[in-house]
Image (cartoon, rainbow, N blue to C red; front, side):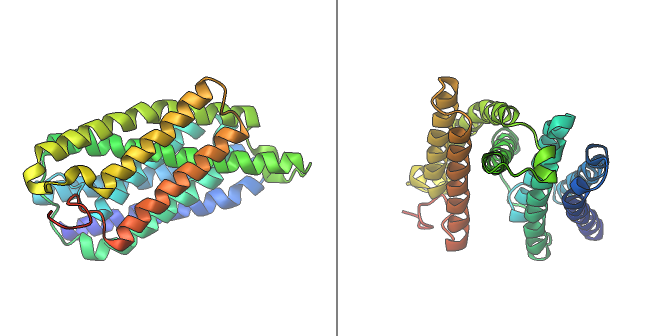
Length: 283
């Protein structure tokens, strides 16, 4: 079983990296919109292999495999791929694959680095229904937010090139600024309530399991950071809805806001401050 897990995981990661490489090359080839179907297919098949790997982990241990780093990153990769495919199915947005797929491949590489030490370990035993209701929607919201940050970067790049009256091949293939602005708002409009739902359910879960998580579960760095994320995305959604944040303002706000949140999450991981018992202590 372990060999099958490693094999399906390795194939999935390899396909994500290959799809990213093709997405960086094909936009500069003839008929780029049609040829970008190839990396789309490669990324989708890679995500399916990662899903099979998670299924095999579940069958091996009888525990929902969403508690280890490699499992979380694999799930995030799957969510990112299918969010990316849904967004770029329309030809007007397909050129955005040259940004989306390399970012997904980068996450896959991190998962591959963690795999040797984590795929041999058993997942943690947690409530399956809470994992599905909380973790899966949370990672879907993370995927939408990350795609929104990448789209914001494309908007700012496109705007700067148009301002300089510089029109390289890639810029000519990108969606218009108006289309990118609508795409950003659509992403936030869906991800914002989804993330609020996961935060509410996560707080309930922490309160329900407070004997295990510690007296100060509500001061967990993850919970505090999630509250900050809700504030940022509430501001971006309502600011765009009333017209205060449009175009470059919305793109800049999302790019900086999501970037800061990602940096904070990475800092927590590096410093080992991810425990719900506030800075890793039990009290």
